Length: 100
Image (cartoon, rainbow, N blue to C red):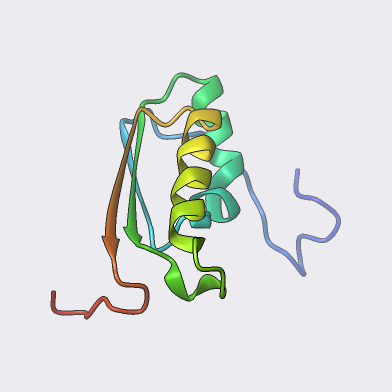
């Protein structure tokens, strides 16, 4: 049965795919904000997940140590979310071209 607001916000939960999953995140924290709930559910259901963070996220603020802080945060988030492997490509933030 759909929720009462289904005409405004269509929503229907579907079962998780069995995996393994390969998740690409433009910046560190996008995996958490974008699909943190699904990743936690995947952890609970023992779905193998892998994460690739594409850019260094340097444009996310003015702190001198921002890139280092974001790397530390994504490492901790990956542990909490049950990510089996984390790969940070560290490409320049806003530096990816569609043909690379």
